[in-house]
Amino acid sequence: MAATSLICRECSSTYPLEAQFVCSRCFGPLEVAYAEHDASDVDSIRRRIQAGPRSIWRYADFLPLGAGSPTGSGEFATEAGLPAGGTPLVRADRLAERLGLREVWVKNDAANPTHSFKDRVVAVAAARAKELGFTTLACASTGNLAGAVAAAGAALGMPTYVFIPADLEEQKILSTGVYGANIVTVRGNYDDVNRLCTEIAGEREDWAFVNVNMRPYYAEGSKTLAYEIAEQLGWTVPDRIVAPIASGSLFTKIGKGFKEWIDLGLLEAAGTPSGLPAMSGAQAAGCNPVAAAFEAGQDVCRPVKPDTIAKSLAIGNPADGPYAIELARTTDGTISQVSDDEIREGIRLLAETTGIFTETAGGVTTATLKQLAEAGAIDPDERVVIVITGEGLKTLDVVRGTFECHEIDPRFEQFERVEGRTEVTV
Ligand SMILES: *Cc1c(COP(=O)(O)O)cnc(C)c1O
Ligand SMILES: [Zn+2]
Image (cartoon, rainbow, N blue to C red; front, side):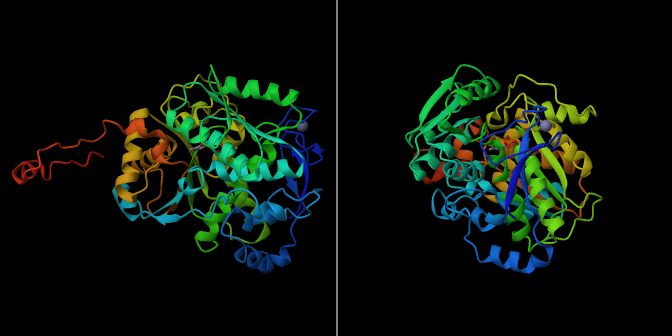
């Protein structure tokens, strides 16, 4: 399925596959369009995927690489860079039981090279940036993107500039700086950082900002989450996906990934009217523009000033917000918001029932699953997949004080006094 053009999501104007992200006619966002696959060829497409590497590059047929590049079919991309994707999908029976559900799976994208799902999107954007001849990789980041860009630049031999809000978690700054990135901390929130980067991208013509001028390519990387989940479930579609929303890119592209494979006949449609899984989005109450618009029955998001411990989701003016709302509505899905306390509880609940320690974004996702289960919004027989997008060690501070340690002298009778006193709090 070769990429053919960039297409405007609003007016369908098309553009060549270059570093452009807004429609010059209507200012709508651009996304990648593909030539149709030959549906009679489904078996050979499936075989080619199965013979591919255990990374996102097994889905190269569905990614926007190789178009007009000297290397031809995107082949270099499978050799260079970090091996993003191929993360575990684990069945979480104790979590399901705790919530009164039958079948819950955890897609653990903390298992990527820099411990968040951002390695997927960066791999695609960076590979396309190389094809287009860019010399420098850059990004506007809420945290995880900075680390992913810094590491990808190191792997590909490209210098990197990352722009982050100055109040970011220290763990995320430290785990970015080690790769030798130029780190610019901006006094402002993510939306300020993003505005600045849009301006810089206009001035520095040989810089590829992965989520600004390269955004259409970047966004395609998230489709691989849907492909992997389907493949790991034996080439089937789950009944529901629960995933976090910051800009809404990840959430909407998971939907696009399932739709492409269903349309092609690689997957059988789900039993829903849309044929897609019910798409349930998750936001923090302290940064809830998409959830608030969804709840109010509106189509567009009113921007907010973020104030939440879920910094990786702290985008107050989400570019893909309206498309996320549309996707949730057309799939009989939901978009919810959870408080900071619920986020902490969500982190603990996932950790104690699965052994998976997630950052705040995963706390938002797990807390949303809990909220939906308790509200009876999930049919107990549904097969649900929650998408855990980042690693708990990057936001360690938020779990401080959520459990106790018992200090003793090195004597047996003191141990006996504290034995069994560690309570499960969630
Ligand atoms: C970036 C990010 C997301 C979602 O980002 P979108 O802008 O909605 O694509 C979710 N979780 C984590 C941990 C992230 O870093
Ligand atoms: Zn347009």
